[in-house]
Image (cartoon, rainbow, N blue to C red; front, side):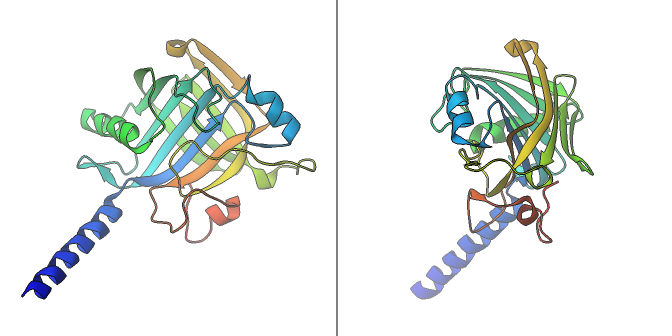
Length: 238
């Protein structure tokens, strides 16, 4: 009898874990920094103390739910301004503005904000403000685009499509976000004008973008791969 009870309890626990994994929020991520994440040591050293203080993260949900709210097809983004280099481990979150989808319901916006706060262990902003704006996240022939209303615009191209850099260039940082697989892309042009943070930020021609997957049941976590591997036949980035 005890063995049967133990087997039944184990089966219930396993089933619950499988159902939770199937319902876990998942999708694609774009993470933009104001410093290069893939470069030569001279560039990284010159930027480490003065640059990297701005960061934009945008999540595109392909499935999953949070707090019993379906997040499929929704997006959320957060813009951060800090005194620290936000690409570096242990840097402080600073101040943040969260962009929520204008077309979402109040319950969906609440769930997205709650998911963001609970799923990103590094996210502890000193001040947090929100905006409800149109969020667009797409892949096209030229690369990847994201926009949040009139406040944010990012145009990124895969690293493989750009000319190779000079000798000695390498990956110096990893995504600040919780991810499974990730790769690096080039920021062709990004523009941010956010009055709530008194921030105007324009960049371009920098390898300062992480493209990643989140929430997927990959055996490897935080694994750096090529874009071809990230977007292979069994994987979809956008």
